[in-house]
Length: 190
Image (tube, rainbow, N blue to C red):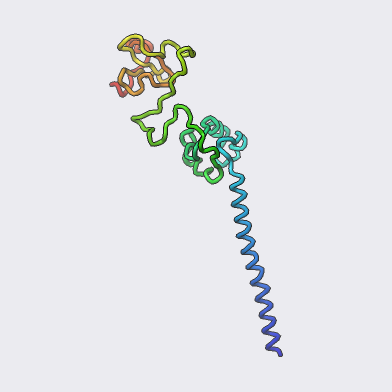
């Protein structure tokens, strides 16, 4: 009789210990799948998120959020690097962000990463019409022998240089005018 009681007691004890452990394991796996689904539903869309939503992401402050907004639309998370977001920040926020509307048109003047290189820079889009407010000095050179002066870097480029007429801020002038105004020749032209 004692043996039967001891066997029943051992059996009940095992059931009491094993059963909650099995249910706890099932509950944890259920909770993980629910958390994964809620995380997927809560991903921040890079193409439509507000600055405050982007600011909540790790490694993203107000300045980075403005860069992200200015670089829209995105086709993938990797496009953030082209908007000036550091690689470490991209890797931190990759699981927390998504890109919806992947068929969005590319930004004007952007090239695919494969076609962008040091020898093949991204060229700005051509002006829509000559009636826009483009100064006459940044149009085609009026005389042969003129140089392109980058007014921001104080460097001038001769014809044949890849930056000749292709910098954001600049104008054409004669080489003597450029030298007299304090501009220096490009290192590539020396």
